[in-house]
Amino acid sequence: MTAVRTRTALVPRTDPPLPTVPDAAQRTAVSVASVIGRQVFDVLAGRSGARSVRDHLTATVFGNLLGLRLRGAHQPEYRLRSVHACAIGDSAVEACLVVGAHRVHALALRLERRAERWVCTRLSPIERTAI
Image (cartoon, rainbow, N blue to C red; front, side, top):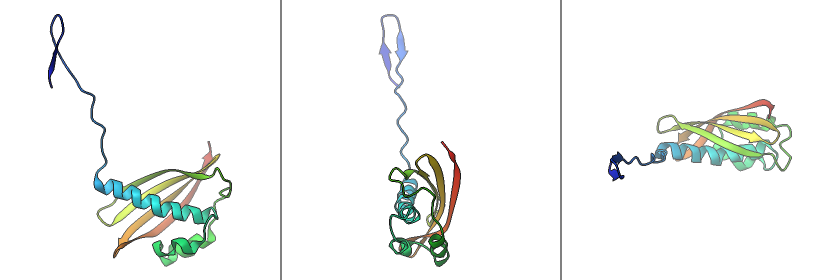
């Protein structure tokens, strides 16, 4: 800390705190969840076919995805609002994607690294109240 001289006394100068920069694991977690989550959301919204995301899903999750649809997701204003992700060790990410327009939904995902690929091992759509 440095001091700044005023007319009457020395006053300590305080610099604003530096913004926190997420560590590499957190940036990777958000990035992976954003890419795969957006692909899953596009399938749930009917904007793309399930085959487009097949390589990033387990067989169980893929089967469940085929039976799911989000109500109202075909509307153009229905979009991905935010992605919240947390790295669980080096090989797993848990994430929540907030999607919607007037009615908000959340998608909970668990992604695991298998060989050189990230795979969604759990998918749970959560419907919430209107905003």
